[in-house]
Length: 129
Image 1 (tube, rainbow, N blue to C red):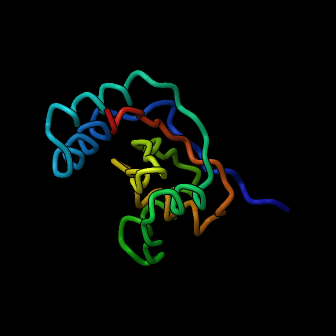
Image 2 (tube, rainbow, N blue to C red; image 1 turned 180 degrees about the vertical axis):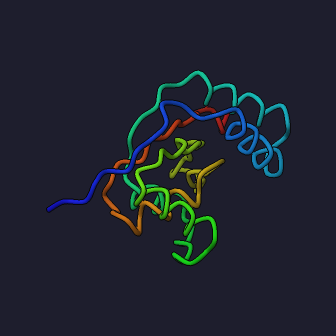
């Protein structure tokens, strides 16, 4: 018997976009961060696998007992919806990895639950002008 697929909210909430803006403002000029978040608001949600997101971002897998990962694993098991992950496309030819602007812990939780399960994402282009 296969595992139940994680449930996803139809779209990110304002708090998710605010979190993405806060993070991106730490690593990019604020104007650029605002443009990327606006792009995330406008783009369609797509599905990508946790294992691919971790590889593309070069981020380590957080441990399952990390509090946010653990909370998300509990939500998944209870069938509670998760917010889509917010991303900024990297550029491998320039050594720039995928940026996880919001939802790193959700990616890790899905990886532990089922590394091939689809993760709902919004991805912004335009990091490199």
